[in-house]
Amino acid sequence: MSKKSSAAARDLALKLGARLREAGHQAYLVGGCVRDLLLEREPKDYDIATDARPERLLDLFPGAEQVGAHFGVIRVREGTAEVEVATFRSDRFYRDGRHPEQVDFETDPRQDVLRRDFTINALLLDPVTKRLLDFVGGREDLDRRLIRSVGDAEQRFREDHLRMVRAVRFAARLGFEIESGTFEAIRRLAPLIQRVSAERIRDEILRILTEGGARRGFELLEATGLLREILPEIAAMKGVPQPPEFHPEGDVWTHTLLMLEAMHEPTPTLALGVLLHDVGKPATFSPASAGDRIRFNDHAQVGARITVEILERLRCSNEMIRQVQALVAHHLRFIEVRRMREATLKRFLRLERFDEHLELHRLDCLASHGDLSNYEFVKQRREALAPETLRPPRLLTGHDLIREGYRPGPAFARMLEEVETAQLESRIRTPEEALALVRSLFAPPDGSLRSAGT
Image (cartoon, rainbow, N blue to C red; front, side, top):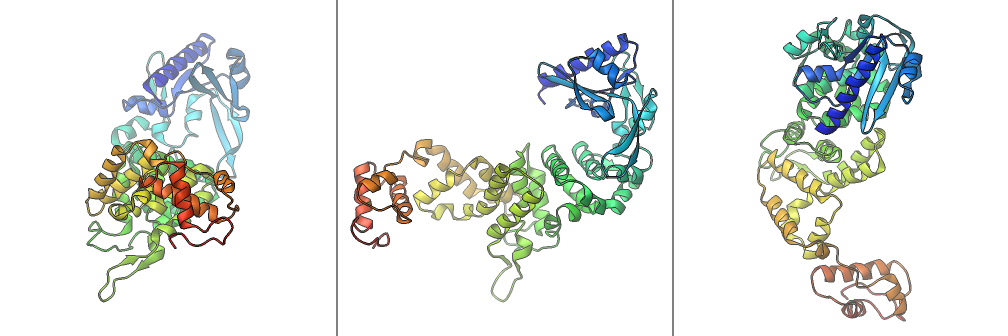
C-alpha cells in the first residue's frame, strides 16, 4: 500500500471511530495496524473493533458491505480507502481447522482479544486518547521481538491450522523470534497444515517470499517441520551436494537460501523462480566419479516439470505457472549466451518478462561462483538492441506461401522459422529476399519438401 493510500485508510478509520463514539459505542484500532504503528511501520490496512452489534453497524454505516454476517464484520469504503469494522466476539467450537462454528458477540474488548492469534496482533488502541489496551502482554512481546500465541499455543493452532505458517511469516518479516512454547507447538502440530486449503497456503508462501525476510522464513519453515508438509520438494534440497568448483557455498538448500536472502522487493513470479529454479537437482543428482564431477543432467527440464506440479497443487493461476516454469526451464541458458547464434540470442532476449530471467541469473551467480560476466554481456546486448530488432515485422506469412503454391502443412513452420532466423541475423530484409530464401531451401511447390539446407 502506498503512503497516500495508507493515509486515506487511516483517516477513514479515525472518522469511523469518531462516528461510533458519538453514537455511544466503544471503538478501537485493532490488530496489525496497532502492531505496525507501535513499530513505527506504515500499516497495510486498518481495522476497528467495537461493541456495536452488526445490525447497529449497518444502521450507522448504511453503505457498508457485509463481509461476514455470521462474524459481525462489515467493510466501509470511501474513495480508494477501506476499513473493516467488527463487533467484539468470542469464538467457539472450531472443527474444520479454520472457522468457528459458533460466535458470541461481546461487550468486553478483553473477550475479543483472547480469541486472536498472537499477542502482538491482539493490541487495542484508542484512536482518540491514544491509550493502549493490552490484555495479553503484546506490548512486552513487541519490545522483546517475540511471536507468542495468545493463551495456549496448541489450542490456537488447532483452531486455525494456518496460524502456524502465519507465525513463521510474522517472525520473518519483522525479524522476530518465535517464543519457545509457540515454536514447539508448531513442531508437534505441523502435519495438521495438510488440512488447510491450497489457496490459503499459497497466499502465505507468497507473502513470506515477497514481504521481506524470505530466507529467514524458509529456515523457520524447515526448522518447524512445516516445509516438508507443504513443499517436500524444497525440503529435499537439504544435504544435496554440488560441485565445489561452481558452488563453493555448499548444498542446493544453502544456495537457494542465499538467493532468497539477496532478493529485493521481488515480484511473486521471480520469487517463486528463485525458490524453484533448482528444484530438479535432488531428482537428477549424479555423484562424482573417476574423472568426472557431480552432475545434475537435465535438471532444468526436470525442474520445470516439478514446478508445474507444485504450482498446480497450490492452485496458482495459469499465467503465474507459465512464467515460473519458463524461469526454471531457461535459467541455465545464460551459460551459452556467448556461443549462441544471433537469432537464438535474440529469441532468448525476447522471452516474456525477460527482466525476471536476467535478475534470476544475477542472483544465481551471486549465490554461487560470483561471476557476472554473462549477466553483463546479456544486459549490454539487450540495452543495445532496439525492440524492433528483437521482434521485427514478419516478411512472410502462411498466406504468402499459399499464394506461391505451397501446400499448408508442418513444413510451413520450418519455412517461416528459417525466414525469421535470416531476418534476425540481418541476412534478408525484404519479402522478395524471404521468398528467394524459401525457394533455395525447400523444394518447389509442385515437388516434395526437402530438409532445409539440402
